[in-house]
Image 1: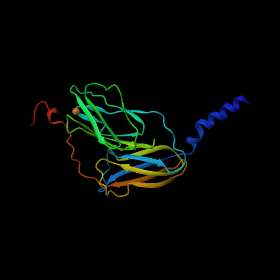
Image 2: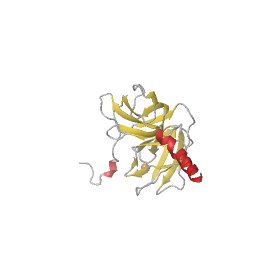
Image 3: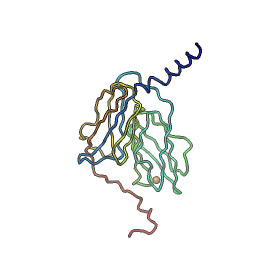
Image 4: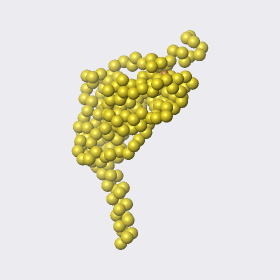
Length: 217
Ligand SMILES: [Cu+2]
């Protein structure tokens, strides 16, 4: 009797979610059909209780006078640390409505992380090094991934239901095609979805002008 109860409990704790979980297999390309890097793909459940996530943390480095990574995706409420791995000081800031903050000129790791409470896109800069640029997509869902060079991600372990599937990329034009799709996902279903983005050219300066010790060639 006791043993049966334990087994039943164990099954109820870890069984249902896995048994009815599905996934979105998402491909992001540009208007010419080229796979898109650094696209944030995220799925928000349209019905049912939103799972309350536990406190999470993330790291955005400053390395060789660049932010690493260039694009981060986090769930709202995540605490982010900004370690400076360079031997010069940085002054990290954001003027974005979703999170305004400033880490005045510092070396090493600031004592306190920065907590991003509100969903939205946050643009990061450095007061000293104008070319330093990074983005944080703060999301109201734990279901997200960022594309690599192949433009593909898989959002796994999603309970069956109806989802709004969305994509965001720093170079996306406001007029980009369909950026949000409402899709029903069945249990144990792997649903293929694709997005085509209209992107602006990449104007980023890849490296700090002073990084090349031998000067310009
Ligand atoms: Cu800097």
